[in-house]
Amino acid sequence: MKTYLVTGGCGFIGSNFIRLLFEKETNVHVVNLDALTYAGNPLNVQDVKEKFPDNYTFIHGDVADQQVVDEIFHNYQINSVVHFAAESHVDRSIQEPLLFIRTNVLGTTVLLNTAMKHWKEQWEKNRFLYISTDEVYGSLPLDQPEKKFDEESPLQPNSPYASSKAAADLLVQSYYTTYGFPAIITRCSNNFGPFQFPEKLIPLMIMNMIEGQPLPIYGKGENIRDWIYVQDHCEALLEVLHHGKTGEIYNIGGSNEISNSELLNVLSEIVAEQTQVNPDEYEKHITFVKDRPGHDLRYALDCSKIQNKFGWNTSFDFSVRLKETVRWYLENENWILSVKTGAYQEWIERQYSNRLEDV
Ligand code: NAD
Ligand code: TYD
Image (tube, rainbow, N blue to C red):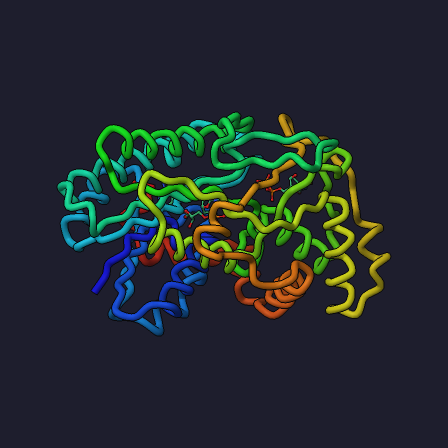
């Protein structure tokens, strides 16, 4: 039996990763450590919990809480750590940078220290996978489409979010260099798909379209992001976890560069088609709002390393995946309701009232 400690497994990517792990592998135990912040929703892994009750353990706790992390390593024979837990939204990091430093930097260091202590250099069996982001590289210009970041590009993060991820990314690298700690880093582009909290562009726009709300585009809408379907990201993570080399960094991108304005047009058409509404309806709601301070213009990744080493690539056409994603949000009313009403927060309070103040 192989035991994975997945942090942030009630969030968007973490929950998709746990689901895929159970689909692809047998004889595994997943310990999911999640603080259930506003972004963590127990419904995201409800099906996993029901299907694999003996192989799935949920621990409500904070990655920066040394005692909780120590207890986990003491109570379970953790083979691999897959570290997703983070404060993940750029706009919130502009409002509250310290929270990002605490979770993303301190939390990662607590995990590194604890894993190092408990693994006692029996490292050939262990892996620590740190889920970093393309945002650590900073911004590319709009007028040089041939430019992309590869794994050797310097780290030049701009937002407090990206800086906190870069700080943790460097700490992970330093544990490999200094102690030989078995760490691997992945840096992924913007994900989309089921279970994404509607503060991020795609689910926010889908929900606002369904509800006839304004569709706020920052600045001129010319900023470019490279979108990857979450399952493609998770498949790449499994490749890296099993076949990646410790001390290495792997870029994971979707090769789907699109400006925010263009994306909104494509999304409007898809939502209109699926709800049988005239797409002009949505155009009326597009509102250009004040730009995000320090707004990165463009992200783009050179992913030849992971493609050449593992033959990994994205699986489906972007618009097919977008259509599936829209359908998911249309069909999962209970999930939407739980997010909108914060219903799951009440559930958390009922289940874990004694530990909420630690979070
Ligand atoms: P998310 O915000 O949806 O989920 C984060 C999860 O972490 C939530 O379940 C939350 O409750 C949990 N969490 C937050 N603080 C915690 C703490 N102190 N202790 C324990 N758990 C805590 O994020 P996501 O979009 O799933 O991103 C997961 C990881 O992937 C993050 O590290 C993020 O930086 C990285 N990443 C995300 C994207 C993207 O497009 N979403 C792209 C590249 C990298
Ligand atoms: P977001 O989903 O927050 O991801 P990130 O900032 O990490 O790339 O935003 C994606 C892009 O969409 C980014 O350029 C900011 C822009 N955006 C808007 O124009 N309006 C919005 O309401 C949001 C949330 C984002």
